[in-house]
Length: 382
Image (cartoon, rainbow, N blue to C red):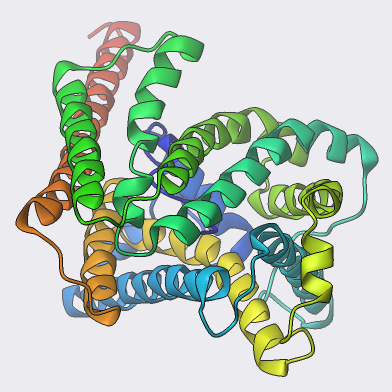
């Protein structure tokens, strides 16, 4: 699954930044705002409540639709009995290629269309920038590849549980790499997630549907999601803080890095023998998957703009719940009570962790405001 997205600490740690003041909805600034966790609250406060509620509902619905559709579409491409394509690396490579082409197309359109109707940053092949982004690209390849392999072997229904450990890895890596400690309530939330993960594995095994390969890829995907967030912060200055430039260079690197992997794992040979290789339906679905992978970044930033980083994470948790229920009904599966309990533990633990981090950030922000206010009073002699 592309995007990312699955509760990156980028959305959680920087919500105390100054309020975002842009009046025009620009693609190049939406994800920058998403990373800093800002929202146009001043403008929102002047809008009628009903109008703002309708906008929020529309944006959240759009996020849910694109995110859920992308997962089901990727599952079709990776594990469809009608396609019978065993080339997960090629599917991922093609989605990266589509992202690069979309970036260039939008860049060219922004030069042709006058005014601020469409704005998009300019790109050029800068080898120095490509080298700077390379460490992130290696992690990025691992993230999207292991995500897709996890989805291929576990299916949509168990996908949420299979790669639920990104929150746990966030806590571990924050302590190991950044020496940041975590509160007791946040650790308890991680404990609930781990409990749900273990219970889910037990229940999948009891039903005879457990894939240890899928679990292995899910754990690696969770680790790469956390590493991707850390490296993104480090690499952003190399692209002048532009998320879209980072997306372009990251996917260009990925396209080149995937080529030896495709040769080494024999996927080009498998592709040449694929019976639907010249099918317009197949390439249409592949291209649609790439477009949805590109779009998820845009709608993620859009949802954060109209709500908040905390609400976005809560929405993502609720979306994962809906996605699991839809998968069980769509594929006509029967699950035990304890299987559903494992999902509830994972989603509940993720919700609690998000809520606890949100409260902690608000408390820190209030303390900073109070400290700044006291300093201003002291400097003015009051």
